[in-house]
Length: 302
Image 1: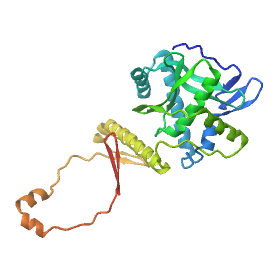
Image 2: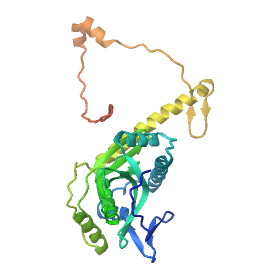
Image 3: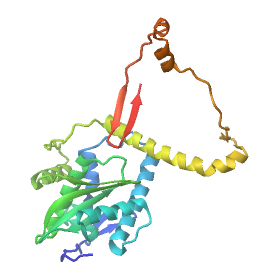
Image 4: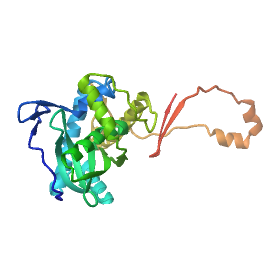
């Protein structure tokens, strides 16, 4: 890993077990995740059961640690890390530091997932995300606060770009996000500590409703589960062909290949057009929503 003479914060310590920041004189500092979620996106996870959130957090923590090991030792034992390594190579991202603690030493503190070397005395900051959908708006706020604190702690360095690094099973993406002005960041922080209302002045890049975001996330999960189901069925098929499996929850049996006899309507219409017209029947069809994804995935909902 590269060395940019980063200033390491010796006044604040992060305690992983309680996920809290404590100064040397015993003062608790506020993490930025709480500020962002409560001030800007209070209902973001309100409809998701806690056990699902816990499982997602465990997955995210695991991938974070594996990517950190890849930065340090170039290890790779899963598709997410392989994709992370490919993103770095393809975009010339040179790791400088992982889990880099930054703070104003008075009110807030956070850990930055990735510090990458840029040209001259500048850096790129990155945050690894493993969520079903990459929330660019929330990520912009998070990384903008990180950039503010980073430059406060390292006045000799400048933050050049902010990146979201999305790793989700076999999917991956490097997403550049916009930096929010320091004056707006400070207004948000002041509103949190003064317990006053904060009116978000930042315009969204796209107006995507929470329902559409949920739909995208659900369809992606369905695609992943469908593929996993196919894999599992192919593994157990040889055994099921020999003997049925049955327990209190499920019965799995093998159905031998068969053939069926159908009616070739197209051929009949071509060879007997007048007769075919006599038996035509018009059937009304309800309208439906068609959801088309860029990776050749069509989902139709009636």
